[in-house]
Image (cartoon, rainbow, N blue to C red; front, top):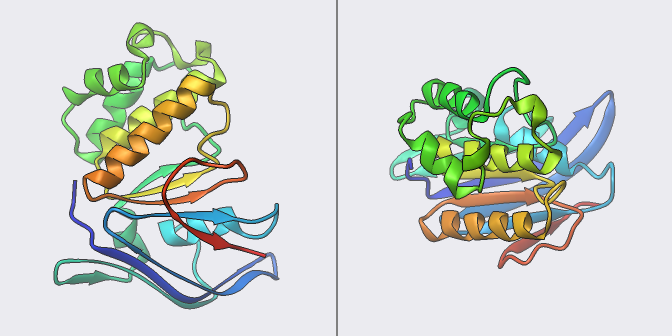
Length: 205
């Protein structure tokens, strides 16, 4: 995992469709820490994650990541440090679970040998050769968790990560998040659901 010391935003504002979604938002997230973003629908939780990921520009304010002596503000470069788990499962229906992970392993420069271990980690070994179109919503979410684990990136951005998971799946997610933080990773989590994780909270109006 690429070392990352800090993610920090100051005075951030987001405008979408001519409407100000949020303004003057700031946070600081250090190695081994998690930040849970809370707020009602439309308050900008997903927009904040997309802004951090570099998928949206900030209307104002500054956002950067740092590791060692390196400080990165460019959106494209910042994106190379991020593992994303969002509403869309990003699966190709005709590919098997194993084929999908091998694709992402090649795309992200991860050893393909890790695919078997990633599937086992999320309890999908028995579905490795099953086309993704036959996976349940919960299994697809577990496959997304396997992809997140496989990418080996230090900053996880998780948008409603508990959705579609049963009790065992939620326990698995929390365990994986705690392991990620314990090894120096960082996590920014947007959620409506209570999440049993030691983390700072950011409330969006």
